Amino acid sequence: SRILAGPWATMLLGDMGATVIKLERPRLGDDTRSWGPPFLPRDATSNAVSDGRSISTYFMSVNRSKKSLAVNLKNERGKAICRRLATEWADVVVENFKVGTMDGLG
Image 1 (cartoon, rainbow, N blue to C red):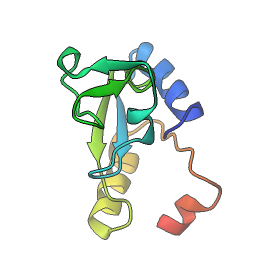
Image 2: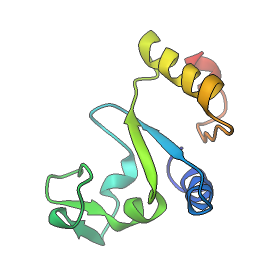
Image 3: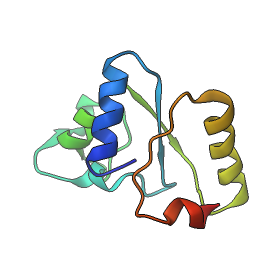
Image 4: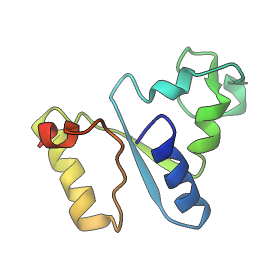
């Protein structure tokens, strides 16, 4: 999930001890990685950064304690990975795509 509602809900789940895996687009990541200012200097974090120098403090705050996995949900391998995570591992799946997007992805 991305933007605000999903990241906030999953942040709270992570704060309460849940293991949260955030799925991001390969090579692009989450749009909010570049939201700012303010930005956190690159040397303050080991996470991938959007511009090579800094990362959004908003992104870091709402995605704290989450693991991140780059998955292409438009190809079959990515869909299979997502289905396996959702059916064999997850207790909860949170998504906040536009209405119909998940149906379109299969």
